Image 1 (cartoon, one colour):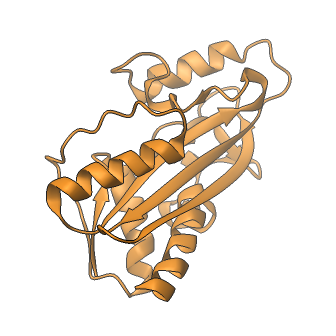
Image 2 (image 1 turned 45 degrees about the vertical axis):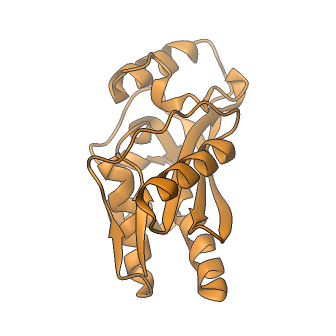
Length: 190
């Protein structure tokens, strides 16, 4: 089955398509650089993922898996959360988002956080959602050169995600957990 991954983020696409490809059941995870824009204006990452899947399916008429993810920091009442990509502003870079988060945590003792991904499949009839959560801590400064987003400050078992190889990250990541759940359900239903 060919599935359009509803993301313009090439790093997310690579990560999810690598996991899908490892199952052997999916012929191609399609990437569209010119994917239509979908305004993420819902109140939860599940609602944003659902909206993306429906709008992109309606436009391209191919099965879609959409993704929405967030970093939730406990001492900041779950921020940046739903606004992780735009935490430091609408067009903020990863570094600007990281700098703002570290500045907001400077006085906090509790640095516990978690990444959450929601995947949403839609093919015009079938709707499936899955999620994955990876718990960890926010480091005091960035470490590592792999990954993207907040990977360089998110620690799990003493290492930031950016200190792991792509293969190591894909064995534990929130996207891996959500994708494995999605694959299991798709294999049963489709």
